[in-house]
Image 1 (spheres, rainbow, N blue to C red):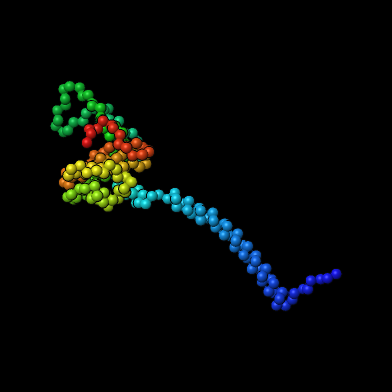
Image 2: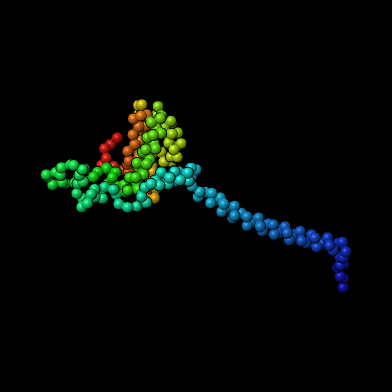
Length: 213
């Protein structure tokens, strides 16, 4: 019976080294296969990250609305103006002889809650102040001004020049709110008024009884 010669000495050590190297190669190949899903997970996480500027926009909204009530609540127009809905009188004012009949509110006040209504005042003040400094309000200059204030392009809508003025809408919905702003950039005569958008979905301006611009 023939026996294979047994390696010894340096040849034996060399054979063991080759075996270890082969095992290491197989292990590296296995790790490479595991790296694939890891890279895919990173790519998936990147795909679901918010659009560029969205985080900064959210931070700006949070800062602007800091003085305002928390999200939620009923529309401002549904709340009574005074105790038991009675008309409030200024000091020294004579009470009316006729019974007071409250007039039903109309417009965005019937839809926007206290947070939205407060936020509209905050946004209007900062936007008007900035646009009043734009002597020639073109769509390009108005967009740049709004961008500098933190309003991203995805929230600027209907930006169009109308003679010497530029009209636009701002989508300011957050936390289930429905606030938007209708703007007219006209230098010192710049105006901003609140409007109403759907709570979710694509941006559109809803008709709520306010006068058309």
